[in-house]
Amino acid sequence: MSLLTASVVVTPDRVLRPGWVRIADGLIEAVGHGVAADPTATDLGDVVLVAGFVDVHCHGGGGYSFGDGADEALRAADLHLSHGTTTVMASLVTGPRARTRQQIEVLTPLVGEDRLAGVHLEGPWLSAAQCGAHELAQLRAPAADEVDELVGLPAVRMVTLAPELPGALDAVRRIVGHGAIAALGHTDADHTTTAAAIDAGARHATHLFNAMRPLRHRDPGPIVALLDDPRVTLELIRDGVHLDVAVCAWLDRSVAADRLVAVTDAMAAAGRADGRYALGDLGVVVDGGVARVEGTSTIAGSTATMDLLFRSAAGDLSDPALLRATAQTAGNPARLLGLTDRGRLAPGTRADLVALDATRLEVRRVMRAGAWVTTS
Ligand SMILES: [Zn+2]
Image (cartoon, rainbow, N blue to C red):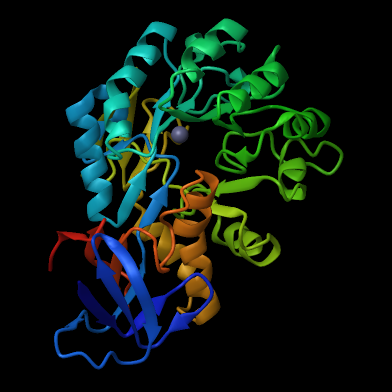
C-alpha cells in the first residue's frame, strides 16, 4: 500500500487542492481531498496529479515506428510512456495487404501483454484526394474479403476509412461486427455520405479537420455531420501545428466535454531531433519539430507527445481547464476503447498516474499499474 499526496489532484469531476491517492496492488484504492494525516505518505510536492494519458492514434516515437517490429514498437511505446502515455494504440499506415497482416501479427503478442492497447489501421481504405502522408499507389477500396482478413485479427481495435469509397458502408458494418471502432478520416465525403456511415456504425472522427474535405457553406463535407452527431467522438491533434489554437478553443467551448479526444498522431521523430525519418515507405523531413513528406508541404504526422497536448488543453490551469484536459487526454480515449479500468483517478482503476509540475505542466513522474516508470 502506498499513499501519494500532491498540491493538485484531478479526478473526473473535481479538482482537489490538495489531494491524495492511495494505491494497493497496482490499483487505486481511494482518492481524497485535503492533507493526508499519515506519516508514511509520499509527498509529490507542487504537482498536478492526473490519470495516465491514453493515446488512440500514434505511429511511433523515439526514432521507431510501430510497423517496424516488436522491439521497435516497445521502444516507441517507452518514449511515449516517459511523457505520460500509459496506454497507447499502435497505428499502422497504408501498405500492401500482406505486409499489413504481418505487422499486425508481430504486434499481437504486445497487445495480449497489454503493452499496446491494440492496433489502429489508418488505411489502406482512404481517399486519394485526402491521402496526407499515405502512399497514394497503395490506397484502395475496402473489399469485403480484405476487411474480414485484416480486421478479423483480434489485435485490431480501430480502423480509419473514407466512407465515400465503393463498399465503405458495408466495410463499416464489418468493422463493427469484428468488434473494432469504425473511424472516419482521410476523406473527401459529402455530408450525406458521412451521415450514412455514422448511421451504419462509424463512431469516431480521425483527426477532425486534418486530411478531410473542408467545411464550406454550400458544401459542408464531412465536418458538420461529424460535429453534429453526439454518438461520434472527435480526435484533435492539438499540437499547435495541425490546428489553430482558436479552432481548438472553439471546439473546447462548443462540443460536449465527453466527445473530444486529444491524439498525437506522432511518428518516429517524436522525442527526437530534427532530421530525416520514414513513415511507411515515405521519406519525412522534420524541421523545427514539424514533420513533412519529403519534397512537399504536406504535414506527415506530428512529433508531439501527450503532455504537450495536455498543456494545450489545460489553458489557464483553472479547475474547468484541468478537468477538460484530463477528459481529452485520458477519460474520453479510455472510454472510446472500452477500457473501464483506466483513464481516471478513481477507486478500482489501474494506478496509471502522471505528475506534472504545477507551473509549466512538464512531466515529473509517471506511474503505470502501480510502478513508477520514471523518477526525477
Ligand atoms: Zn495517423
